[in-house]
Image 1: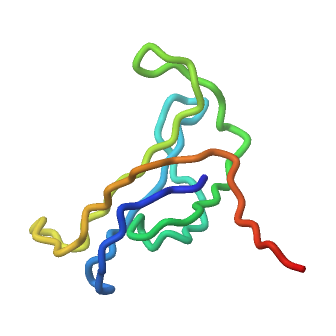
Image 2: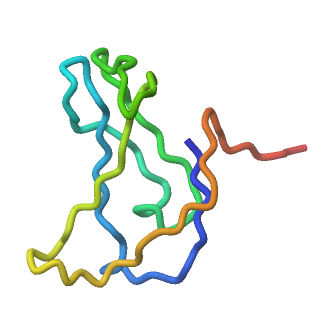
Length: 102
């Protein structure tokens, strides 16, 4: 999935720690394996997901779909993290980078 981000300058300690999860066949949220080229949604890029076999359609919020979510993981127990909250301006499925060559 291609995520278009309203990019702002960030330092390494401001990059949010994000865990991705999927809704499984037992109707529970489960950790999802991913490859993140967005630096925690701080820059535009592709996030690649590896979906397991128990990733099935399910109904949530009155809609039958395949459900995933991003969960912010606090780095500091006090909740006083100095991270930049990402602003996502677009999400595009089935995206791939392309380079024009001659």
